[in-house]
Image (cartoon, rainbow, N blue to C red):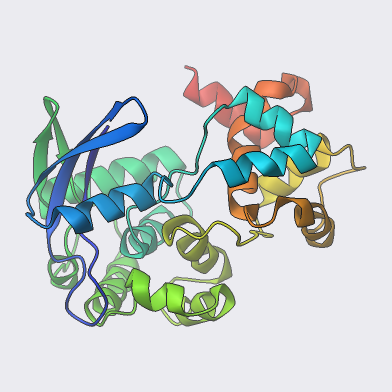
Length: 280
């Protein structure tokens, strides 16, 4: 794997995301070997890579969820060893929330790459050029960027200032309850309930926060558990009691692996469209 990102801090304003790094990751048996460029703080680099790949938790606990829930067991068998891949950091997730809003996912991904190539640092990893997101100080100085409207530039600068102030540090956000962290994130311009949940659930490395606003997940749960329609938030909460303390992982597994065990006609229409695009 080839990873390029801004390195986490260790808590406190001014310590996070100022150092771009590139990492080559290879698997050797049950070990992951990392070669890092851009920083000599290998302990910080390894900790961030472990969180991003969700290998900082013992996967045996998640297998026990399948012993309690036959649906999860089927999905685990279909996608053996799957762990949630996370955003590189809350900073990266917040930037993604701004640039991807009301855009197709692929278009947002291309914009993120262009922003890294133009404003960030590019690393040669395994023979490929991989750009890291611009550090907050660079993003704060951004006046304009192609395909990014002025109001979103302002929102990106707000995210950059929050990162500089330490409000997007992993240590800060995980010291709060997930609900309190989401509420605080919603003070940022352009970050509402959906995206604040995205930052907390898909960037902080938490295993047991239940996302109840993902329409696709609710639709898939309704199909997998043979409900009359998409699951309601209450139905999801009740079903997810068996998934503790890995409710986040269970929902990611449902999103990622349902297509492997359901016939195409049983998938929600949006999921069928997304799968068709990815296989072209």
